[in-house]
Image 1: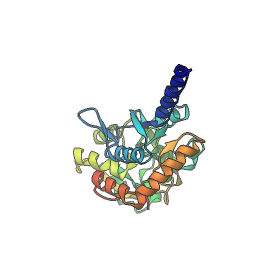
Image 2: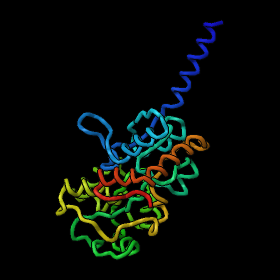
Image 3: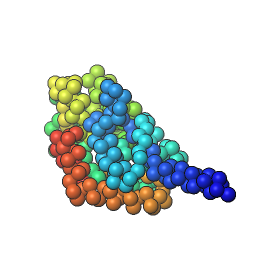
Image 4: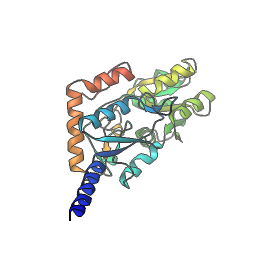
Length: 259
């Protein structure tokens, strides 16, 4: 009888340990949001945010690197418990997964070769008109892809796995423009040179295109009410005490926390 009780107790402890371990999916190819350092470790803004969430909800988090367009499908089939990868909250995604309250709200930018006609665009509509039938690079499965397909009807949409591929093809002249978060463009432009890549038009937000959503949030499977409550509580506290702001300033040099 004692042995049976011991086995049951160990089983319950194992179940509790398992319940406190969260598998976090991210696409570590989007610095400074997330990337892989020389030692093969995932680093970046989202990594620090996620680690702090785990600390506050007393969970052990196991980070897994996955191509961006496979993150939400992986979440839906149970491969991950959370996805933290600069995922914008919008209506289409919210039909498939649940989101925490937003922890960040990052502006987006079109980049072209210097001297492009789009450089002088004053509005989102001006950008769409100036780029016309241009070949525009976007990351697969991103809100940027949704925006170009929905609002740049004549554009030749080119889909890439990674942001650096967009920058390289733009420098090589294989595409005419690219769309991604301003913060993701910054290291790419710094590395390749402002004489090869230039911002075009205004910064773009959900006020311009609703596909950009309501900021970036932690994604989780539908119906995980207890988990959502814990994550929401952690994010709310991190916004109120300035933790997200501090992490953003570390990685971006300015505050992108959700106001």
